[in-house]
Image (cartoon, rainbow, N blue to C red; front, side):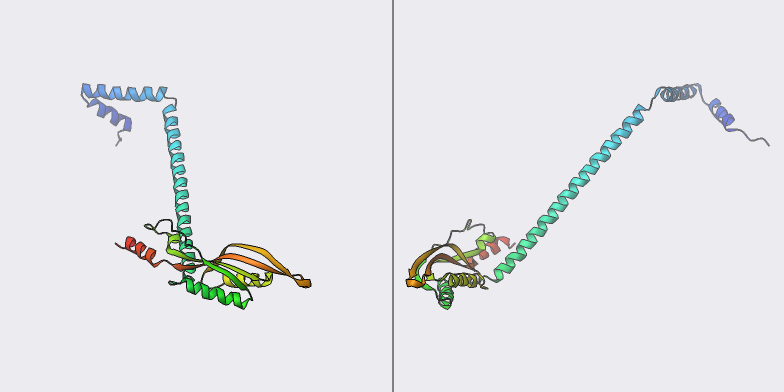
Length: 216
């Protein structure tokens, strides 16, 4: 039994079409023919180029997003490190540290290092930057005193080293070192050491204000 070929099937199918349907099919085939005949591939090339440009743009956006994410991660790490360091510093800063406490400490170490205190006076504490919006710098208060000592260079250097190394955070601020006098033929030089000595304490008022703002 002979099988009908595909071409014969197509001819039979087209032959069963009505005249309008045959005309429509011919028009479609003609359009496809001329499009295939005269198309030089520019449409396909344009589409390919557009796809490439879109891919490049998407890759650029991806790279930029990765840079932003990396920068955010670095900023987060910096903030966490800063917070850790602040906690370490805060552990060395007492909640309550009076001027009399600072005097007691300074007098003890100056006497221990054979320094003669010739003058002491109060210094005004600096005003915090923003009382209503306390940041890290506003959570700490200064307790400053002005001192003047007389003694040898070695004793002064040892005094400064011991004061700066205390667990309670105390630092030497502005200072001046000058020669006092020469004693006899020994030419022993006594020095005058003028310094602002600053103690630190936590600002409970600023911490309470900050806690109220952070609470829901």
